[in-house]
Length: 123
Image (cartoon, rainbow, N blue to C red; front, side, top):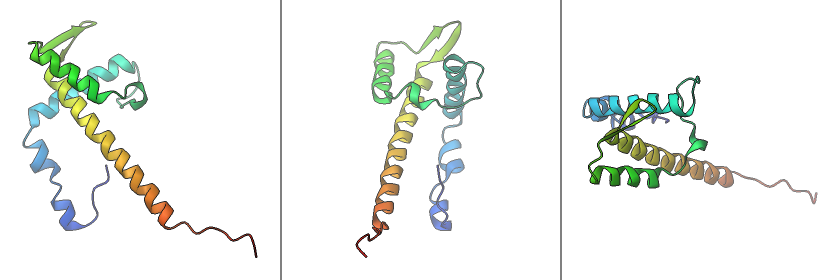
């Protein structure tokens, strides 16, 4: 994420007071989910989001919501307990991040095309 450089815009993005202070336990749960999932999907590697391994955030989000609707609030896989709530939040954040990344990529391409000046070869 790139925070705005403008002071007023930065103040309008209160990561601490508008997110961490609102949802400290939920964000800790999401962080724990990231840690457990990294150990499962990227054993021995530093914590990172291997985005190429799964790109079905919307489908996974709805599967977890369906689990929750069926009363499944957690599950155990390979001896590790996962929270359905944390999985839902993680997938929602991943879906949002992918959308923001795609938008930024489109904006970058748009800016590149706007400044493109073809080289004349007929001179």
